[in-house]
Length: 389
Image (cartoon, rainbow, N blue to C red; front, side, top):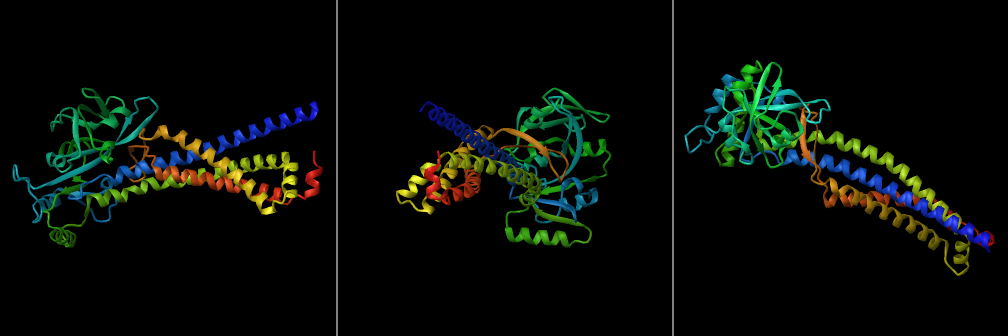
C-alpha cells in the first residue's frame, strides 16, 4: 500500500506544480496584453482629449502635422484679420495665435541617454485659447530673455527643467521660469517659449500653424473655412483643433499592433502549457474516467468536464493577470511619436473594457489548451481505463 500511496502523492504534487505553472503563464500573458493595450489606450486618450472644439487650426495645405507645416508671415497677417474671427473683449485683439514647433534634444533625468522634445513658440493669445493649461509653479516667460515654461511631466523626465534651472539647446541656453499642467493632454509633452524669439533663435522665417477662435455661429464657421481654403493667396488647410489631434492618434497604432502580435505569440506558449497540464490530468485520472463511463456518463460529458476544467484554470490565471496589471493604471510614461519623432508623455489607462478583453483572452487560451486533452479523455476505451493502475 505504501508504494502506490507514495506514487499517488508524487503524482498529485507534479499535477499541482503543472497547474500552478500554467496559471502563472496565463497570468503573465494576460498582464502583458493588458499593459500594452493600456499603453496604446493612454497614448490615444492623450491626443483625443487635446484641443478645444471652439478652435480652428490652420496648416499649410498638404501638411499632416504642425512640425512639417510652413505659414509665411504675410499669410499670418492676412489670416489674423479675416472676417469671422472672434476678438478678445478685454483688448479687442483677434483671437489668432501664430505658432511654431521646434524639435530639440534633451538629456533624460536618469542619465539614460537623450530624447527629442517639442518646443512650441506661442504668443499671449495662445495661452488664452487653451483654457485647460494652467501655470502651477513659477511665472510665465518674458519674450526676448531666453525664458520658457515647461510641462510638469517634462520637468519630471528631463534634466535641468525645474524652475530656476537652465538647459542648453545647441548654442542657446534657456531659463525655466514656470511649470504648467495641461489636463493630461498632448501639451504636457511640450516646452513653451515666445514664438518670435523661437523663430529668431532657430533661424526660421515662417510659422508652423495658426490657432484661431471663430465666432460662435456654426454656419458662419463652415463658410469661413470654405472661404479660407478657396483663397488662392492662402495655400492652407483649416480644420477643427480636436479633429487635428484625433488624426495624431495614429501614433498609438504601431504600439497596439506590436502588442497584439506579442500577446498572440505568448498565448501560443500558454495554450501549450495548459494543454500539457490537461494531458497530465487525463493520464492521472484514467481509472476515474472509466468509472464515470460505467456509471452512465456519456463521452460528451467527459469531454465537457475536462474542457471546463481547462477553462476554469485559464480564467483563474486571467484574473491573476488582471490583478498584476492594475498597479500600472495612471502611471506616467513616455514614448516616441511617429508623427513628430518627439517624446510624448502620457499615462497608462487600464479600463474595465481592457480587463474584460484580458479575461476573454484567457478564456480563448483555456479553450485551445483543453480541446485535445478533453477529446483524448472522452475517447478512452472503458475497459482499458478500468484496467489502468
